[in-house]
Image 1 (cartoon, rainbow, N blue to C red):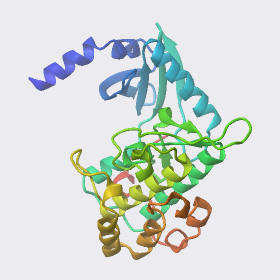
Image 2 (cartoon, one colour):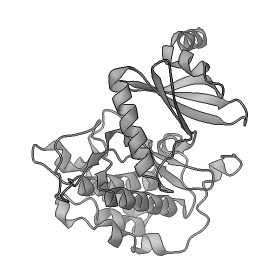
Image 3 (cartoon, rainbow, N blue to C red):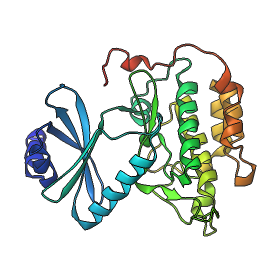
Length: 289
């Protein structure tokens, strides 16, 4: 019965109907619903590959679509997701991306990362963030759900719709206010009323993400935000990976000014020690274009 209603709702969904009119993609299921968009898993009709179509609707959706298109154009980097195609059909705006594995999905399935892959993926995360910050943007939602990886173990940062500028046209720092998302992987300053640096908050979130990857930690919605459990995080990580813990300790500091910048973090032994292949074995037999 549930599969019938899933099929019925898919067929009644206007975003799905619009996608059916494209010559290249056949919708399979809605995988994520935002306020002004839906992400739909599709079959690519000619190459027999799967893709994710992000379909924006309404005036607010068009604004988000325009912003995301500009960002994807300006932020082309090997560790940031790139768009395969973009189109507009009957007032709906569509971005199509590769269908890649999420870091969060691997964690949810309780599949540990093989030796070397956490180091490689985290280095990719820092490299992508360094590029993003160098372009005067911060991400604001660094967490496993917004990190994808390819079949050969290359990390891609996604979830760019909430990025914010960190410098104005005169190169003056722009401080941020408030919290984005549920706060599970957010820095402590995001919960206060005091303006904060988006760059330093991103670094903190990267440290919490590293912990989740090392410990295969999948937080429940009812759990406290991770920044409330720093001592527990450090203790857990130390049992698994001492070198990784050294990185985490120097990132998840309450005082943002004491956190190590990315340029220094990239020189830590955790990221420079030669280890085994970084390719996640789960995807070794899968093909991605």
